[in-house]
Length: 205
Image 1 (cartoon, one colour):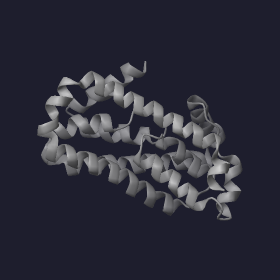
Image 2 (cartoon, helix red, strand yellow):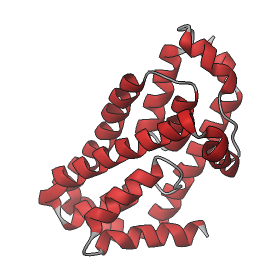
Image 3 (cartoon, one colour):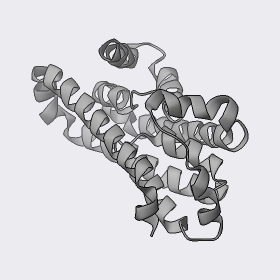
């Protein structure tokens, strides 16, 4: 199922409305979708190298918008919606962490977690919903999300735009292995998130 979902997401990059679908994937990926937008950004940028800034901008803005929706779910609808997303991925929310963040004990630790989730394969959606759940400062949440997601997407699109002609033959030759690598990185990201969610008390102390 995951492989089919991955392939269908990649296929959207060749659609005539690819930019719309990229925006859509970035939004839902920040809320519940397991496939990262990178799998669309890569083929879209390789096909339209001169539009890498536009592609990265769409991805960044849409991802932050999705993050805001995830934040709202955690803040207002955790019991109705958020908890089911966590259960789907095998996690529980940071209920006991809320007071620690409010008194400042875990403030900087949470910023680090947000930055890690925004820039790495660690599932961003788990931190967006959790940020709303613990009532983390909304404006700082937006700032960190914008900086980390923007850095990730602009660096990726920029590198592909300037060096894509050199790496494209290798991408075409090893596409199957690259898909396995991306899948592996996602699994590692979920595993890291699992470790964080089960050991967060030792992380913030």
